[in-house]
Image 1 (spheres, one colour):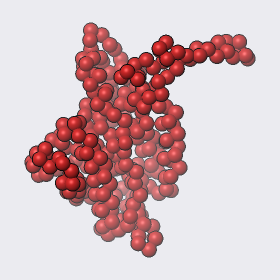
Image 2: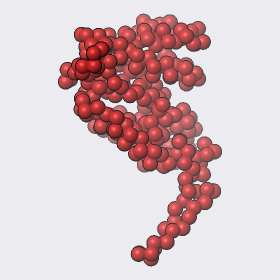
Image 3: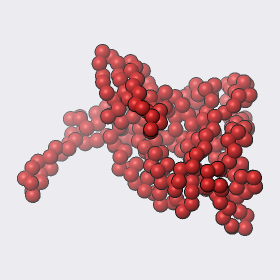
Image 4: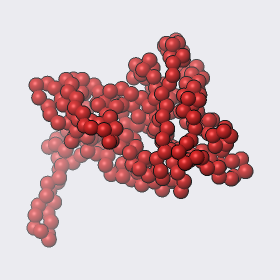
Length: 258
């Protein structure tokens, strides 16, 4: 907060530029260039997005989302291990199921990103994996998936949970986990995303920018903050009002994705 609060204010200074053709002067304030600064990561996001697009294969892609259950979210806020285990476990589960001949029978390509918040900044750790619609067989042949199907969601849910549990046993978190979490369904979702370019565009702000941009903060009044958000890109706009203290807590807890 100390780093980003003075961003684009007199505290960091600025510069005055003069345009010869139009004979106009322009003020520009210096930015904090901090990763959590709402206005400071547009250029890195654009560069990162172009790099991601450059490694896309000319094949169909899928977006697979794996979500950490409610019972583990409090633990994830105070311990980093569950978040990193989540990222690794999701990738291993998807890859293992794709290797099954009943799905693809080959090794798929994927790129995963950890996302820890909802659009109204509540804690909601989950992983977005962009996955190739097909994989390489052992002899190097390309094995395409079906156009609208990658892997079965129910087996993936079970395998994701089992993989996370096996990884978790390697850490010191064993006594901190409620045993009931291993008996419930874990939420996974998969959908085709065409060439994958739009999926990368959707995901880029979560990797390179912060959880909320200034234009979504509608009002600050009487110690409360009102913001707008959408559950989905095509969903109607919703509004949320929380205390300024709660807004600061949510903002600081919503780290950029890894």
